[in-house]
Length: 495
Image (cartoon, rainbow, N blue to C red; front, side, top):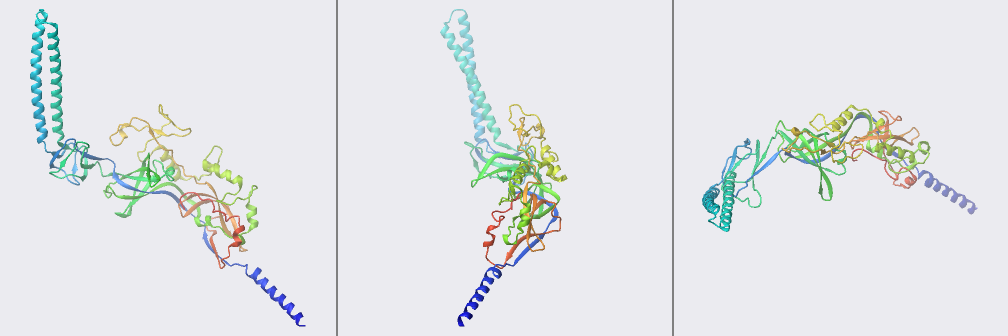
């Protein structure tokens, strides 16, 4: 009797334990974070830090050594070209002129004596009263004294030039931004010319000299708009335009950078030389496009809340490949064609017809609106140009800067065209049954917070899932999820 009671009781306890372990214990309650699809503008920037400098600045030095006897300009002095700004003590230089003048007079006297001797010897030689050797010696002495006379004249001219160099003139019109000497200081120009002043040509025209990382330099083109701020005026935004991308690499802590010059108008004279500028270069923009948060593209749900039937319906014939949103071989090849813009791809047809994008591309290619050089289709003689690219441009002589008469073709980096539809992404939506369904989208530009998308399955205002949290720490059920290997492929700005 006791045995009959114990066996059914043990079976009942075992059944209850199995129920709680396999049924009640495996259920999870998820809390979802939602967002909505919106419409708006997306702008993509390349950020960098640079230094504000005058467009033209000249370091005024001295070619002669001596004591600075007078200074006629100080910090912030406005000077004109040709004005006297400093004076080196000319005492020793004047004595050098006097010595050279005395040497010239001695050379003139010796030359005159040699000429008289030659004339007398020649007259006797013509009458056969003097030997050939005597005549040759007189002629040699005459030629030697003649060369010595020219040398003395050159020495006197050199001494006078050095004396003139003791007076320092302003080489350009501008403002003195630095003075490095004082009255009574001795300057030595034996090995290198010491700097007395630094003169900026026009502080109403400035430039930002910034360095761009090699990973971002491909997106920077001549003619692109740029904005920057300085610590002195944190509420003001200054505008400029990329005017030059220098080819010389600058390696800083094993990171390769390239110098980018941005021209800026400083009509209000707020910007000062040496200020640090935080620069943002506009490399792409889209107006009134459908966009989603980047968190939605990176969300990877666990397998137990994914509608597997919907996932199988969206699978291409080649099967689903996990990682970075590559959905089968067919889509992968299609995405590569769109990125590269190869012949036969539909990259050009897929890009939205944005007037802002068209104007920026025309500006970058033609150099309009900002004095940028215009590309020419003529290949320079002896130059090298890759196929299907215009890389050289001839700037007229009147538009050259820094006083350089550049008569040679100038290399120009290829213009950057921002891709508006580059690859595939995946967004999750919650259906009525509490399961997550994937929605495949084509992603475009990204500003680091939002990403442009193109799809017919969503419209502005639709709810999408950004994340999910559960009351259980058991994550073993997500091991079989094909979407948890890697995040979806992302494009545009840095995440």
